[in-house]
Amino acid sequence: EVRLVESGGGSVPAGGSLRLSCLVSGLTFDANDMSWFRQARGKECELIATIRRDGRIQDSFSMTGRYTISRDKAKMTVDLQMNNLKPDDTAMYYCAAEAGWPNDCTKPTYGHWGRGTQVTVTL
Image 1: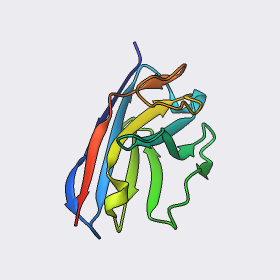
Image 2: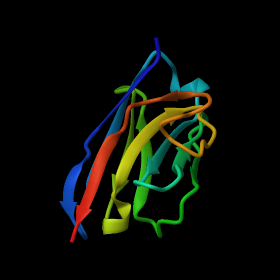
Image 3: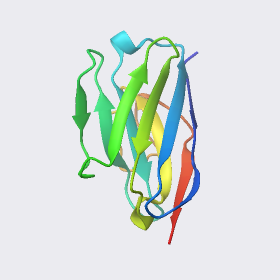
Image 4: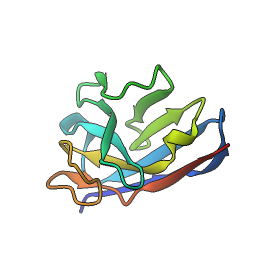
């Protein structure tokens, strides 16, 4: 069974940092592209970044270098480091494998998804 479990969300003041982590089981990084998405209330699902099975990183989201995706094969985690957070970054953040890009992160059409972790950035 494939499981993706996100952690690390919370409330942080603007300008702060958070590191999200996705614990993965039931699949291998060598055979799957891993991504982080986010969805703010009332908005569509946004792809933040993907780390390909060969280790290449594709930033699909213009965040001026504030977000960094990484993976640890030994720990089976995919992390998202987020710096200089802004109130507009408030959203539910999701980890996904081989996910495509759905309009609604809560209704993906394929791939494997976690349940998400909430990030709230306050003024």
